[in-house]
Length: 606
Image (cartoon, rainbow, N blue to C red):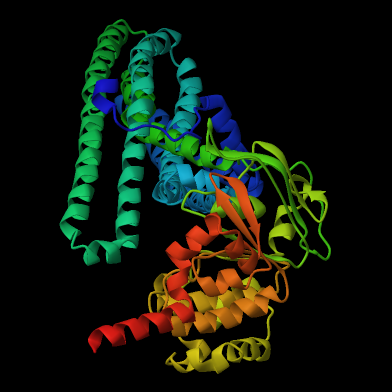
């Protein structure tokens, strides 16, 4: 089996639940709709009773034809009432069933989405977003479809149970013969159970890979076009699509054995009932109508089991989908809070005490790291890539769990704070700012939906005298496009900064958001940064001289350790690692350097 369906690994957070647990968990969703479920069950009962009584009355009609035929019209009238009641109740049953299943699927999607947004960033570092999307959309829909199919099978089994009670009153011998054939179908159905669960689980994983590839390709289509790699991403999609096709083709081949197998066993069972029944009728043990009733009952007894076996793949698909849904809901965060202390006003005092952190086990990024950032202080972190600058910011935002030590915010252990309350006091501008579809105004209001238009206009006009707004065709009402695609990089960064300004955070974190913009835009962004710095404790991770020099204290990092700290002038006099970084990255941004370069170029031109 591994050779046939290998190559589709489960996610780390996947779990395998027993059927009993899955049914219990599904039952909890059903319990929220008790009234509709009860009405649906009444419909099931009436439909099952009607389906069971129909062959009984047909059998009676045959006996009436053989005998006097006096009660034939009455039997036909009863059959008409049975058909009418079956139609009406079947409509009601289906309606209630569809409503209940629709609500359960909607509730599951809400639970899945809530679980997805509650997962910490470490979760998304290890798992692709496309696979998560597949669980929220495809798996919940698959589960709903299978529940609808399952309701039909339940109705058939209910009909069989009622019919069985009626058959016992006709002939115990023939009923035993009929039951004697049941182990054949039970054995066949159960034989497919284990195999079907495996292949359907692999089919779900294959579809998740396809969804993830599509999501990643569409999201990065601009990069692909820039590098003329449309053919490459097409080939990548083609490869995963072929993998999905091969998995589902083999899955279909295995599951297609169900109908032929069940058909052969059904023919054997029917032959046994016909042979025994013929001898019983000739011997006068019961009538021809009763014999016909048992012949009909073979199909009616076998049909639910044939359905169960034939659609076992779908049932297993539904259970596999439920497994994947509940696995996402039950996934545990690595960031765990020990308490939920609500915050009042936050001064912004940040303390690292012997903190050790590693993304991967055995590879620490910070080791026994200690740092004290005073309330209202503006601290800039500088260092080569991999020095630990962004890691410190991510630990302050509580996106990752550190392994040892303590981080305190205003003296309280960060692990004891109410995360929602704490993060509402943070203002974060990432290196690649993300804007949601909508207008500039809507994106600025994202962190503070209650901000007034006058307040937003005042802040927007204070940045570069509002010149950046003049470049927008509709001002604050300008649509930003998907992920801000209709704005320039600098405009997106300005909107992100204004979003933070409107939020009025106690702690501000800027992660290299001015790394790749023109000097004019930089000056506007610096205006916004200065406004924020005046109001909050600030963590600055920047490659721009203007941003670094505005800090009260510069922390120089190497391999996750502090090797120097002080203001710009002090560090330059020390002529250490910072001076080396300054000469490498920052000196060319200074005005004196630019003026000297102009003079040199002018001299060379003469």
